[in-house]
Length: 99
Image 1 (cartoon, rainbow, N blue to C red):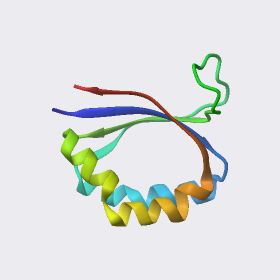
Image 2 (tube, helix red, strand yellow):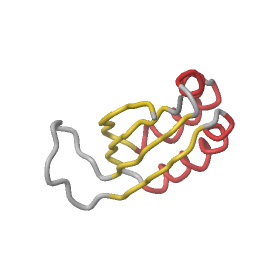
Image 3 (spheres, one colour):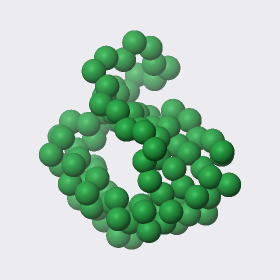
Image 4 (cartoon, rainbow, N blue to C red):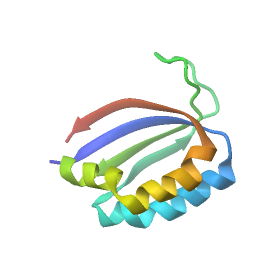
């Protein structure tokens, strides 16, 4: 069953985050994942968390096992450490659901 995760980020370095996306996308696709929506947000009108958000997206996987394998993949974790960690200050998992 397809799994989708709605995520909000606060990206502090667009160039570094772009490198993260470029590096992780082939790995994501190899695990049956992708992005179904991706937005840059200019203003947050309501939020249940104190963390800032300027990017919102839906990440999908063919199933939960694929999602778990992706997030624990060494190549993905290396790219995340190199590019994501220095470019994103806040991460908000808004929702996760099966479709």
